[in-house]
Amino acid sequence: MKNTLLALSLILISNTLLGQEKPDVLVIIADQWSPRYTSWDNPEVRTPNLDRIAREGMIFDACYTTSPVCMPARVSLLTGLYPHNAGHDLWGNGAQYYPKAENVPMFHDIKNAGFTTAQIGKTHWTAGPAWHDEFKNSGAFFKSLGLDHVEDISGPPDSTNARDAYADHLKKKGLLEKVANDLHDRYIKGEMEPRASVVGPEDYHDVVTSNLAVDFIRAQPKDKPLCLVVSLHSPHPPLDAPGDYATMYDPEKLTLPGNVAEKYLREGRAMNHASTRRMLANYLGKLTLVDDCVGRLAEALKARGTWDKTLVCVTADHGEMMGGHGYLTKGRFYEEAVRVPLLVRWPGQVKTGRSKAPVQMMDVYPTIVEAVGGELSPGRFAKSLLPIAKGEKESVRPIAISEIGDRAPLRMMARDSRYKYWADEQREFLFDLQTDPLEMTDLSEKPEHLETLNKMREKLLTHLRSSQVNLSAGYKPKVQRMREAEEKKKAR
Image (cartoon, rainbow, N blue to C red; front, side):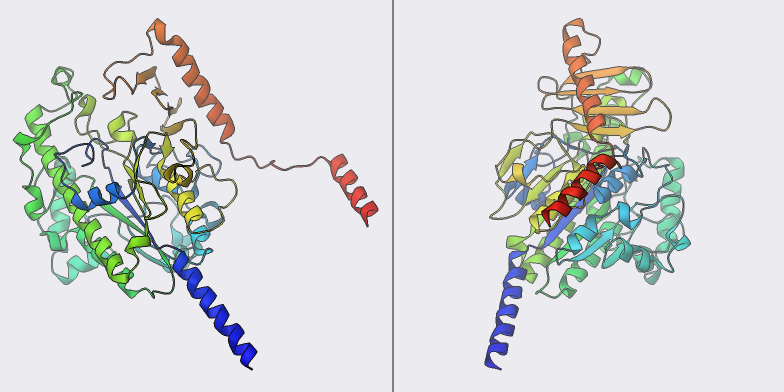
């Protein structure tokens, strides 16, 4: 009896120790966050909580989304695949896509390592066929993807028929119709018009989302690690920062990058500088609100007692042009839209500093799986960033790519340690990001850069040849199989 009790005690102690060794994981995804507006590069941006995470971890300065629009980028994170991969032909938000458990293994890989898995906020994984064609309710659908808990908040509701946790919050306070009417008006007249939200910060969607995330953290048992993805809608338009966030930045004191040039006014592509600064002021107000939400999440993990060993990844699905090269919103391969911020913090494990290695936003997935001691599903093209973050390697991939398009030829971009190349429906582009970070000088038609242009074309082609889902991988010809079977017989 004593031996049995001793054995049981040792098992319990072992399990407890194993639980302590596994970190909690917090992933924060902002929406439409331009890399031009990070406080560690731009002192005009006020995000003290993100500053602390950046100081305590690794900043990845060359992180790129696999597609500069929401849905394909988010699905890439879930799958660890590129938009061009089989079963994932998702080149834009308008694609018909429905995630099947066998194709989207991220949460299963993390859950199998002993974690409670959750996502709160925007998912934006599906289009076309709805989950109810196959599942009796949304809970069953999310469970099939390996998620224990989900609050899917698509964004601020522009309809009084909205159904999610945020709409329920607004209904209880009698605010849903007010918010829906305001947003409908903004979308009709232009979502980039900077104007304060009709509700205060306490009733703003990102605050409600982060409060739900805090409630989730508080409710979790401390003897089991959690992996929580919090997906916030800001700073995505409409430009409706609430309350004081709408006025905390003075437009007249903001500096626009050099590629937000007046010359584009003559081409009919942009607003004047004064209008752009007013938009930027509201946009930055929304970023500061995101930062305050991040602070709430950090405090909840501190109260849980795990913050000092929590793996934190902060990123975005894509960026925002904000006047760069005369454009607004997203969908382009300029740095403002295609590059995204990425922070990886894990005290005692990840070095502090910065990396200029080309990486992909979807690399967050295998980074988490490696950190929690899990097993990555085979066939993924995303790569763990821990070798870089721990100082073991300088890079894990030769180039980062991005893809978008709704007609042939589809647009593709490649970025190595120095140059960026892309081709659209009409022509090619080449920029030297080392000497021209604002992408003001296109080198693609300059004879002296023809060799570089050809090298970038070759790198993109090699990448495409190397990142195809190969259903014949591991195939053995019949003769080989017969010989191996015969050798096994002889070995007996």
